[in-house]
Length: 319
Ligand SMILES: NC(=O)c1ccc[n+]([C@@H]2O[C@H](COP(=O)([O-])OP(=O)(O)OC[C@H]3O[C@@H](n4cnc5c(N)ncnc54)[C@H](O)[C@@H]3O)[C@@H](O)[C@H]2O)c1
Image (cartoon, rainbow, N blue to C red; front, side, top):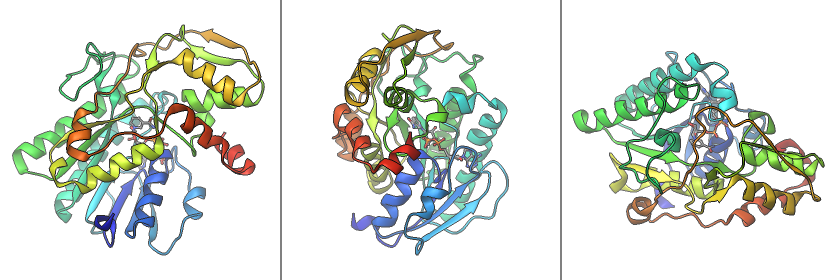
């Protein structure tokens, strides 16, 4: 971790779920962090619980012109990530991922900084290959309700890889697969916090679809490890990596596991499947293993149990 001593890092979206974990890890490793966030889905409260000595929080929208500090590394995590949020204002999602990424890229160039871009497994859409390798071009409905997110993340990748090719820019792209862990909020509609909240309150767990669709859930501590390595490892420059856990489960299996750990024989009920919801998701992580020396360590059961380790008041906040 010596790499992470005395760096100055801008974390756009640092008040969000993954961003807060990343900010904490970078501060603990001995660097200075600026958070840039518009708090559209993020929360300032948890950032206030961190040591403030090397932390500065800037309020701003990455798609709007903003004066930013000189930094060594920029992490661009600023984007709504849950369908509930990114579909609620699709044009804003576009502006964030396209204009916002462009502005952060320009700033990275002006600072001669490394830019680590949080992309997503959604660039693979409803994938035709399985597991998904970084070379898969994706299978995305360009005009469906998910496209504002999938296609704007794809367009951001296009911009950044053009900059790698034409300018030799120091850009590294993480295609993050579903991540879960402490700090998620129920209101953002993602499966694990929803299921845990329903299980704990004695309600039926609601699956959208028949539950046969698969996902590969990665504990946030593993995702953060991958993101840090992406910023650190020189050979990651100009490259794209899947960051996700290759252990694949059906959504029904995940719901059953959550009933076992958090519930008391809760029913599981099925509702309509969202349009263009992908059927299968599993990352091929050979590239991250060989170049970054990274692989996830936390099993689904251990990761879910990590939610139970928390103090009750914190758990209530999370759930
Ligand atoms: N969580 C996952 O499973 C997952 C999976 C794939 C990709 N990702 C990517 O990782 C990143 C972080 O995801 P997350 O789960 O922490 O989401 P999140 O919604 O919890 O956090 C996003 C943060 O970005 C901020 N933000 C949004 N638009 C902004 C804007 N225009 N200007 C400034 N700040 C803005 C929000 O306020 C929030 O703090 C996103 O880019 C997302 O696309 C996440």
